[in-house]
Structure formats: structure tokens, C-alpha cells
Length: 301
Ligand code: NAD
Ligand code: MG
Image 1 (cartoon, rainbow, N blue to C red):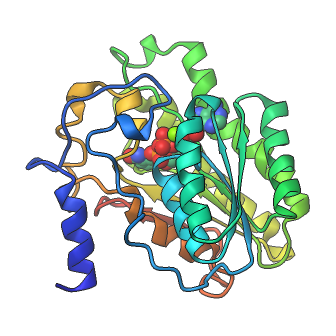
Image 2 (image 1 turned 90 degrees about the horizontal axis):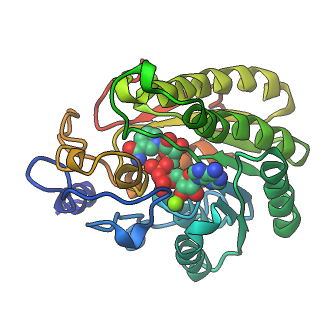
């Protein structure tokens, strides 16, 4: 079996015949160990090649899901990492920390609710202080709420506040705070979504933030290019992470990801390559202002 057949088989084994998962729900923010099956973050598969040797990264939402897969891969590529997350996710953050340390790298934990401006800014300062600087900012934290009836009439301001502040305001605040630390060869990687291109009715607020994140990426790349700082974005398709059972109806899990050309949801481990590439000062030296889709075949244009 070739390497890519091996990866494909491992990912498919975590799904059922429809490409989805057993019915399940959790309260937000969701925890990894309570998922059936537990996602694959590359714990047993990612092989590092020193592509980020000596760099330092802050990964928001780095405790679980896509952020955890990025943390594991970055550590194995030689990067020290700081993880931002909610206090309720301490157990997930500590698990991720263990994997980073197993790779021989430093892992700094900086919990706090980034919908609060002061906290969001302090998370970046604390991360940079404790890592001795910052080379990579991965703006990955995100929230959605899909357990609501009807369309825009049912949308509450409190829900919009949580979605817009987590996905957008924090992105602006944390980027501002990181800038003094970033220099030539540094990069920022944002996380948008297939929802920016093919929005679901129930996710009108979330999809709006993700489209804005794409625009933010192109805009900021133009501003920071002269300083040698690259700004890019990853747009995931349906990925098996705590966000799904924590924010959607449990009965949507069996079909989750089944409508993609590849016929299944992706695993967090399948996103790590995009984040390593975009962060790498050597491999991606001329890549800025781009959105890289990892969607199982759904179009991102
Ligand atoms: P996840 O639940 O594992 O990660 C999201 C993280 O966001 C949480 O772990 C949490 O630490 C962080 N977060 C949320 N609200 C926060 C707050 N107020 N303060 C601090 N941290 C907060 O799920 P994931 O799917 O890995 O999500 C990562 C990113 O990927 C998100 O931006 C999400 O929108 C995006 N995304 C996910 C999918 C998918 O199908 N899973 C698809 C497209 C985009
Ligand atoms: Mg989490």
C-alpha cells in the first residue's frame, strides 16, 4: 500500500458507510474525548522534515480539532507553539501539549475568552513573552451556532455577538497585537471555510464572517507584503472536530461530509499539510494573499 492509500484508508475507517458519524451532541465548546470516533490529528502519522525549525507559533483554538493537528505537525517540524483556548477546554489543551512536548518542543498554554478584547490582546502578549518572540500567528479559533429554527428572523444579537467577536473581532485584535513581533519571513494564517463560498441557510452569521476572513487575508497581505510578512488562509470543508457535535443537531452527524466529491468528512490530520506549507519560509516564500481550500473537492472560487 502506498503512503497516500494508507492515509485515505485510515480517514475512511473513521467514517460510516454514508461518510458520516454516529448521532451525537455535546454542549459547546465540545471536548475531543467525548467524540465517537475520536478524530485523527496525525498523532501516529505526521513525519517532520525541519520545515519550521526554530520558529515560534501562536495557534488560537490550538487545543483541539484542526488547531491540534497543526500544533502536532508544527512541533514535529521544529517549531515551539503557544495554544489559545477556553478554560473549559483545559483537558484538551493538556493533551495537545503532551504531543508537542513529545516532539521535543516547548508548548505554552494561554487560556482565555478571546471575545473579550483585553483578554485577546493579553493572550498574544503572554504567548510572545513566554516563547521569546513570535514568527507565526494561526488565527484558527472559531464559533458557529447551527441549532436554530428558521432563517434570519430567528437570529439573536447575543448569538451574532459570539460569532462575530470570536471569528472576526478577535482576528483583528490578535493580529494587531502580534504585528510588532513579526518580521521578514514571518506569516499569518487565517482559517475561513467552504461556508465562504457555499453558505448554509442555518449558518448565515458564521458564513458572513468566513467570507470576511477571505477578504481580510487579501487586504492584509497587500499591507504587510512590503515588510516581508506573508498572509494566507486555509478554507476547510467538513472536518470531524468537536465544533460539529458541539454546535449542530446530533441527527446531522450521520450525513456529515457525505455531500463532498470525495464522499466523506475530512480528519484534522488532513489539514496539517496546508498549514505547514503556508508557514514555511522556504517552501511558501512567494505565497501570500491566497486561500487554500481543503474541502474534499468542493470548489473554492
Ligand atoms: P474546534 O472546536 O476543535 O476548534 C475551535 C476552537 O476555537 C476551540 O477549540 C476553542 O478553543 C476556540 N474558541 C472558540 N471560541 C473561543 C473563545 N471565545 N475564546 C477562545 N477560544 C475560542 O473545531 P475546528 O473545526 O478545529 O475549528 C477550527 C477552525 O476551523 C474554526 O475557525 C472553524 O470555523 C474552522 N472550520 C471548521 C470546519 C469543520 O468542519 N470542522 C469547516 C470549516 C472551517
Ligand atoms: Mg476545543
